[in-house]
Image (tube, rainbow, N blue to C red; front, side, top):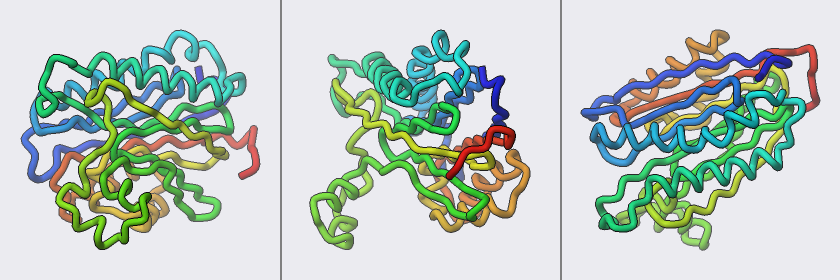
Length: 258
């Protein structure tokens, strides 16, 4: 359990302006030090159920071994390995080989595992993870969207040309769509006072990094900040489900460097 460091968590979600159901899901597991969001494809009750199912499948690999292991004793490399296996497990459960591709249900994933002064980050799809550092008033995006647009930019296509593609924002990776899913976790340092933000595209389609930063700087209360991030996405015109999970390391007794 996270008994040797103080972690505060807050979450907020909203159905959005033009959705019938909330297909977003989020997971907050303080015992395992695991925090994540997912965004089920489509606008049906099944979409939300798939998103929740994926998070629980990933979570299963953390509960038993990690709930009794203090973050200071965790190795970020093992966290990355467990995250890969967890996402593979979720993908295996959701992927239906006998179902036509256009009828397969999928979901995005973005999450983090706390390992004392390190975070293990992973994502599939266009849900994102950011790290906000109040001491420097900076926010850093820790994930890259898995979209046709980003793949095209990676191949050297000019931005205007890549964006003009009919399927520019289509996902190239998600849990449950293909037989195999290649997850590439990353490890980053964080320090007391830092805030992790995991959110779905219902937030980031309407708020850029600067707007998110302004919101987090304005709010000392984590609960207020989580709700305000979602509210401002909706006020900016947000039509989609919007979900934000904020995680702050508040213990300054074991401070580490940036």
